[in-house]
Amino acid sequence: MVQDEAKMITILQIIPSLGAGGAEQACVDVAAGITMAGYRSIVVSSGGPRVAEILKAGGEHITRSVHIKNPMVMLANALWLAHVIRDRKVGLVHVRSRAPAWSAYWACRMTSCPFVTTNHAAYKFSNPFKKFYNSVMVKADRIIAISSFIAAHIRKNYHADAAKIRIIPRGIDFAKFAPEKITEERRGKLRAAWGVAEGQRLTLLPSRLSPIKGQSVLVEAMALSPPELGDVMAVILGDDQGRAGYRRELEDLIAARKLQNRVRLVAHCDDMPAAYSLAALVVAPSLIPEGFGRVPVEAMAMGVPVIASDLGGFTETIHPGANGWLVPPNDPQSLAQAMTKALTQTPEQHAAEAQTAMQQVRARYDKTKMVTDTLAVYDELVRA
Image 1 (cartoon, rainbow, N blue to C red):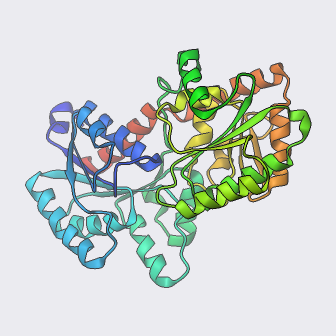
Image 2 (image 1 turned 180 degrees about the horizontal axis):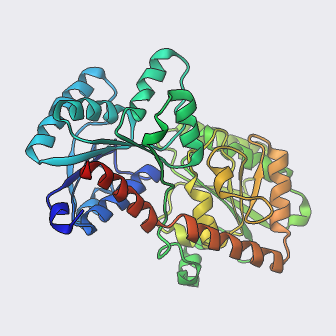
Image 3 (image 1 turned 30 degrees about the horizontal axis):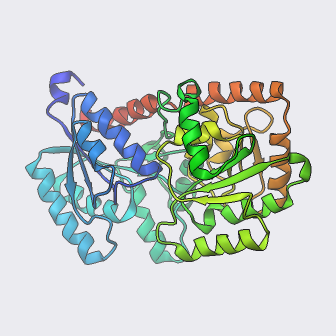
């Protein structure tokens, strides 16, 4: 597509909200790429703290309750979207979640506008209705899967047309996740805020507080860790997002295992590169398959050893014996054993593994490549 044509095209992305999370980060990154490529960028969501990033990148944000799953609201949103598509001369709609995807699907049918979805998770179903609800994510003209695992899942369970699937892994910003840019001052601020003493080695689990993320597995693994590991502190980093009951369960478990001085719950961190840099080890003990798993890739980019559950997207980014460890899900004993191996590596072993990990993630998971590949999908449809 020549530049003059590109300037006439408006790309509309839709996402439930613009808070924390991998799908939200991808939306922000692609929005910036859209404007840099000469397209007009619009994002529709219910709002959130990352709206400012859309505006800073030269995009437009429209606030709409597209996250609501009520069928009547979804239908009203579809009619509204059809009007927006016509009024703003939208050339393509890209959706990242199911409820807004139904609205967008109907709106695009009404306007003959090209329709793209990104499948960020392996959506489960327990009955035909739920399966039908999920199926909207494969009704698009192009279907982006964030891993080979997700592509296989939607082909098997939703009979997605393989010719329409494009595998585009998430990308990270290597200008941000760069070990050489982290100062001791940044690390020191986090160490003081988290109560991690000088000389203590930090095991970090960054994720929203949710039972499926396996925080309780880490607590149990810390209770099983052998004395020869020395002074190790675990920080479980993430907001409970309203799951106050689960936070209390974790606090009770920490107390029951007498780990109050060895496990910390921290709600939020504004400097994740420094958090990774402070860590001696990062764990991702999820109980269900992750579509991709951003945490291990970010940690590896920072040269930090990684242990994750042997599930889903993790198996595509972590290669045991080369750049990390995979353990059975919901197995504190196996996690404790892997933690012992990781934390007792020789400096030479650690350096070799860190170098391999950094090279692999930089080659495969660059944010620029993710954006370029996504724009190429848009180009396929806009040319048509």
